Image (cartoon, rainbow, N blue to C red):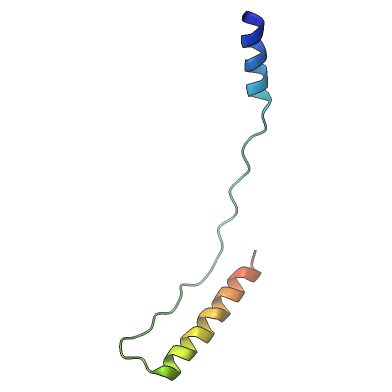
Amino acid sequence: MRATMICLLLVGCATPPPPAAPAPRDCPTLPTLKPGAGRADMLDHIRVTADLYARCAATI
């Protein structure tokens, strides 16, 4: 019984530590659409947001 407990203790201590958390990204805040925005504003918003996402993903 004592040998089993010692083996369990040694196995528990031999496990590797958990992986480190990834470094936080320095990504700008996303733009917001103003109420009453037109079609051109929405398309521009989509383009700008996609560009920001692409830049943020490239900083990995």
